[in-house]
Image (cartoon, rainbow, N blue to C red; front, side, top):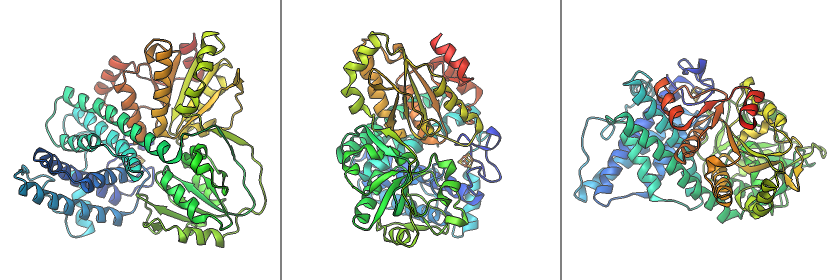
Length: 540
Ligand code: SF4
C-alpha cells in the first residue's frame, strides 16, 4: 500500500505497511482501485457531455465514491467492492447512452473499459498496480495531480452534503469529471497548477452550495450557549458532519426520553434555529475526533457516526457504535436506510447518564449572518483601535503533540485581538474564556470546516468596509490541517489570492520541494514556528 493523503502519514512520507489511521493494505488498494474506476467513469461522463448526455446519478455516485476514500471515512473492504461494481455498471450504462446519442468514448485500454477482477485477492492486487506513488511519473506532476485528487476529496464531501439537502450545481460535477480524467493525461506543470487552483475555485462554489443548503434548511446560526456536561437520562451521541442525519435522529428520538448530544464537528449544529428547536437536543460531549477511543468508552449511550472521522472502535463500545451514510467499519452495524431504530434501541438498553453533570458551556453560532449583523460595531472597534488584529485559527485537529502550538497561540494572543475559529482544531481552545472587546466576544466560533465559506464572507465584508483587499486587512490566517477537506479549503484560500497563510503542524508530504517553492513564491505560504515567534512576526 501507499498513502500520503493526510497529515499523520507515517514518518511524514507515506503509509506503506498499514495506515497510521488504521487503514489496512487491502482497503488502501481497494480505495485506489475505486479511484481508478471513477477516473474511467469520468472519461465516459465527459464524452457524454459533448453530446448532451448527463446523468445526475453518475455525478452523485462519483462524489460519493471519491468521498468514501477520504481519511477516516470507510474502512470496510466489502463496501468498496460493492462500490466498484456499481461504478462499472454505471459507467457501462452511461457509455451505451453516449453511443446512442452519437458520441464516442475513446478507448485507451484504461479505466474506461476496466473490468474488476472476480476475487477479493485479485482486486487488491489490481489496486496495488494502479496505486499512485510519488515516483509513478514526474515527481512534480504527480505531486500536483495528487494535490488535485486530495482537494477533490474535500469538494466531493461538501458536494455530497449539499446534494443530500437538495443543492447541486452541474459546474461542480463537470469539474470533478474533468479533473479525475485529467489525472490520466499528460499535463504540464502550468496546466496542473491551473487545475489545482481551479479546484479551490470550485470548492468555494461547493461550500457556498452547502452553506445555502444548511442555512436554507435549518436557518442562519445564532449565538447559542451549549452545555458541555450531561443531563440525567438516556443518551445518543451524533458525530461526523451531517446536519440532515442529525435532524432525522432528533425526529426519530422525539418523545422517547433520550437526550441527543453532539460530538466533534457536530458542535456548531446547536446554533441552527430549526435544530435547536428540539427540546431533547441537549449539549456537546467530548472533544476532537482523535480522543474518541477514551471518550466513547465513557459515553453511556449509543453513538452514531455520520461522516469522518471514525477510528477503530474499542471492544468496550463496539456494540454501542453505529455508522450511516458513507462511513464504514467492518463488523459495526451500518444504518443504510436512515431508520435509526437499532441505535435508538441500544440507547434505551444502555444506562444513560445517572445524574446531571455540569461542565460549563461554550458559545457557538458566530457564522457570517451573526457576525455581519454586528459589522458596524466591529468596524467601529477597529477604527477606534479597540480591536488591533483578527486571527483566523482554524482547521483540523490531530494527535501530534506539536498541535499544542494552537492552544498556546490562542492563549498568548493579546487581549485587543479577536480569534475567529472553525472546524475541529478549535477543541484545542474552544472552552477558553477569552472575554470580549466592547461586547464583541474575543473567541468567535464560525462553525464546521465547510463554514470556511462563512469566514471568507466575513473577511470579504470587512475588506469592503475598509475599502481594501483581504490581504490588507489586519487579519492573519493560521491553519491546522489533517485531512483532505482542509486541502480543498487551502486551495480555495490560494485561489482567492490570500497570502502569508501559516500552515501546520507540518507541510503535506505530497508537496515536492518544487511545488512548495511555487506556492511560497506565489503566496508566501509558510509553516508555523513557535507561538511567540509567529505573534512577533504578525504583530511586531
Ligand atoms: S489516510 Fe493518512 S494515516 Fe491513513 S493511510 Fe493515508 S496517509 Fe496514512
